[in-house]
Image (cartoon, rainbow, N blue to C red; front, side):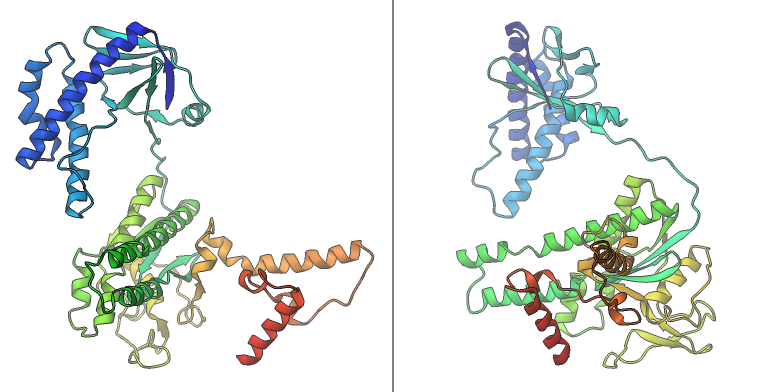
Length: 461
């Protein structure tokens, strides 16, 4: 936002534009409500000739931008009206910001020019630090902008920056990503990794909360409505999807690779629950939002210029990638229902790991498979709290190395202080020190008490 001080003549000419723009905007909103129209194209077609006759000296593109503004307001108003969140019959025009397209303004570092009824007016801008931050990073100014008139002959100009397109790169390989209800699996540096999302726990937790709130009461009750609206299930899941999508895309960008995903159809949940009679399981599958997570990864990949390949998801978890025969999984009630065995080679495969190698095969890229190793049936798992605020998935894998470095640093400090105590060489503490979590020490009166709590927990286990 640029705040510009102008003289009375320029302010008066811009005020005339604002008043006529507001009249056009009101007419467009009334026309849209009367005819149940919210499309920009249909609004412009319905009112253009009439408004052009009423405002002959106003540049015609102000009618276009007013219709775009009206379309956005009508869409928002109709959506909120459908949700029962509106209190008026039509949108109120309290504050008007005049929208500009590439025919109505010109920008340079020396001046900003805006079209009015009597020609162009020139403004001398004063640029802020935030403007120079984006301008010097190579961001380009978009063709659209807007301005708002304030008291004291002040004009606030709102230029819009566009992020420069990412540079394309040669793909060195692919990172397969398999989406599941409670985790997302991927190959990181050639090794399978399971990243927990805890969507199952979140879904069930909020289902129990809704049941407890509405039990024995009508959902139309005001207090019940307010309590149900205060639940943040959708926002928690959205936060997890966005953060995980960014982590996956940044890893692909760092390694110079593309991403392989299953091309999930729109009706994926309906097909998955066809033969399921358990209501709770059906609800969990519907709320797992596989397509939403896939779309989040695709959108973030477009932002960073990472290529995404969508492949057919058929039989990715049920066919051995080596022998191309069926994998037999134990029934759901067993101790490890997600670990199966190849009919021919008798290798053990985790359901989420075998899907990764089948996705790679369908992408036309075959890498060495972890036969005879533990990763094929017991992959490394990263819990939600370990990656949710991490800047890289590699940092989550190096948590153990960080602990080791911290232990070494402690004993080096003791040596420099002249106090050499017996070091736990050959014991577990040198590479796996006891960790006291935040909730265990935050209200404790002594660190020794937290150690006793850990010992008690260990004896309990």
